[in-house]
Image (cartoon, rainbow, N blue to C red; front, side, top):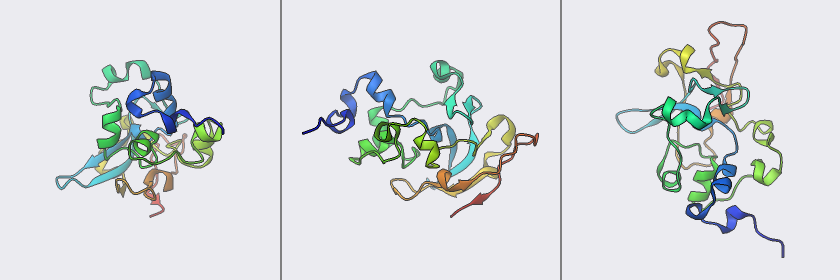
Length: 175
């Protein structure tokens, strides 16, 4: 019988730092702002942190992110269970809720680009908070926590033109 992958046999709390970090599929959706209204409703925007590189879907200063952005949240096993705003496709959230990794996850596919190839990332779909203006003007969908079919940023069709100084994303969301 083939050996099971570590994410199927090791509880999140017992993973090594290397295992934990490898769970991140590199989608970058956790770096894209969400808004919570007074009733607790969550909304997805198309605005990312100023340190997010929309081409690589990586933080431009990952090691210092928690200092540079005081409200940047480091996901922990406890947070993976509790943070409703985490993308429904997030490996940490999926495993914390007893679900498996999707076939496009790089640990399953063996290809670090599979998350982008399957349109499951924020790659080139977001604009920097430095250019965006009011977050309320950039809401693209209501977030439905824990609904595996609800993945608004993956469904979002961005129209980012790098030659346009305002670099505004369109509101052409497939709802």
